[in-house]
Length: 306
Image 1 (tube, one colour):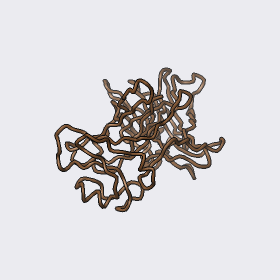
Image 2 (cartoon, rainbow, N blue to C red; image 1 turned 90 degrees about the horizontal axis):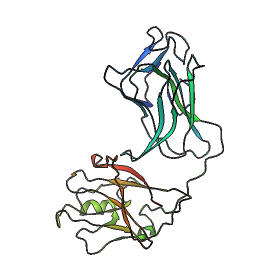
Image 3 (tube, helix red, strand yellow; image 1 turned 135 degrees about the vertical axis):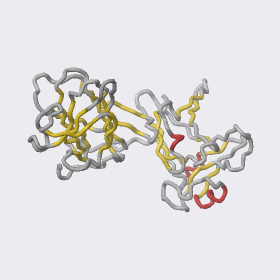
Image 4 (cartoon, rainbow, N blue to C red; image 1 turned 90 degrees about the vertical axis):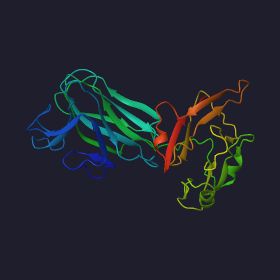
């Protein structure tokens, strides 16, 4: 194991930092698939993981088990050693955000093997200073691809810049005054501490996300007493956000889907302040799986329109 790394997997011990999905297997240099030594120990007895699709199948993903948090002092890099005996598209390194996998960005793609390389090759990718999971994916039909010594660690570079925040609210401060439940709709949003909210709405969480206790506040809508089937309630942010094409911003939020999924669902819209007054649904997107995350606080994220 590489001492001091934030995340590491060398396949000589249990790989707890990364989860592997799809068609793969672990081997050693005595049973080469496709190389006769690993990278960690550089001997036949060393272990590595290789892509192992059976005929007619394909697909492999390797993903960090837990969320990587933004660094305050040094940049982070993802490093991995790979070997391939084929020349074609090999794999891509992506970052995912949101528990429903709302945002996916490709940081690097290995399109073909460097024909001058006959041994393990390093890929080193600088990570964005955000809350992320790393995903390595391939979709080959051949077995000629192996990975070893996968890690996340600090790397050289300038101190990461703090994110630019346009608006933030934890419902513990006067920022709550920026939100209003729109009238004339059957269901009305409330802002309350968790203890009181749980007495009003049986399915509401007994602890907020900010403090994790009953005294913390959040916004919620009571739904146990059905007012009108199929009707809605809107929580409106009155503060206008000015976003230009020169910068991009994301909406981050924590949400709690009531355990009984037939009682509630959540959608988030943007409302343009120009003459068009256009309304656009932002969340959930087509890829989002938020509806299966009922009964606990979960993280949602989506790009904001210009």
